[in-house]
Structure formats: structure tokens, C-alpha cells
Image (tube, rainbow, N blue to C red):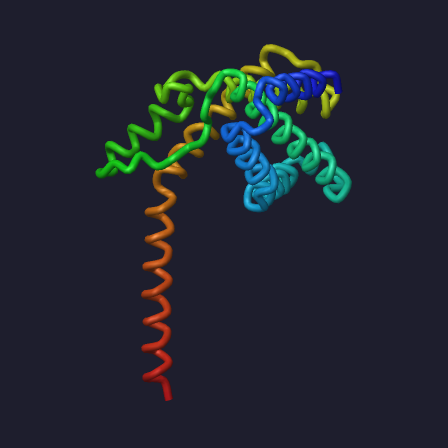
Length: 204
């Protein structure tokens, strides 16, 4: 796994570039750890892996043998990507955290999320291309290719960035509209509970 050498190197370079008591480092590290151990993200990877394996039954007739290998590879790819984002983001002073725009109006919020999906904030607060996210994506593609024993070709890199771009926009839109979805779900659940109580009250 020679690609992991570069991940570790970037991470060490970032650590030594920070002062031991740096508040910025602490915030970045805490965010990294929280995201790395987020059970929802890990569960989503498990679900996606199982779904994909269901359509690859011809290539691997024994899902109980192939699923752990694929799942471990996807976890390793995610870890390599996130670690690279941590290191490169620290060296470049980028903030990759996504936040709702606090705007009003569906169209304005949608446009904001799409426009900022592939951007990051620099040290001065201005928006610029998220180079650390691009680097993390590339390392993740390289690690995934090595894990599966495949050469890192230009076509695989292009395909990997295409899929990554869809996740950029998906994450940005989810961050922007997740509060609305939660409110709608809570409202629906409350109405359902009231309807259930009403039906229980009139039933003999």
C-alpha cells in the first residue's frame, strides 16, 4: 500500500506545521475524529456496499465472502480521503466544513449549495476551490485501486472524480436542506400521532 505513505507523510507534515496548543488544530482534529467515527456514515457505506454487491452476484457468488472485502476497502478509501483532507487542508488553511447558508427562498438556497459544493473557505474567509478535497479524492481513488489490485489508470481517476463530484453536490444540498427535512419529518410524525390517538379514541 505505497499510496498510504503519502497520506501519512501529509498528515505528519500538517501536525508539525501546527503549534501544540493551536485551537485551529484542535477544531480540525475534533471534526476529523467525529466524522471518522460517525455511525451514520459507516452505516451508509455498509448499505451502499451491500446494494452494489447484490448486483455483482455473478462476479462473486458468495456475498458473505465478498462483502467484508469490499466494505473494508470502502472504509479504507474513506479514511485515506479524510486523512488527506485533514493534512492538506491544514497546510493550505482551508475550511471544508459545510454550513447552511441561512438564506431564504428555495431557489437562492439551492443555487448557493450548488455553487459552493466544490469550494472551501481560506484563512481570510474567502471562497476558493477546495484543493484539499480534490487531493483527498485522488488519494481515495488510488487506495481503492491498490486495495482491489488494479492499476491506477486515467480512466479510473476520471470515473472516481465523476462519482466524487456527485457526492460533493449531494452533501452540499443535504447540509442546506437537512433542517427543513427534519422539520417536515417532525411535523408529519406529530400529525400521524394525533391521527392515531384520534382513531384510538373513537374505536370501540
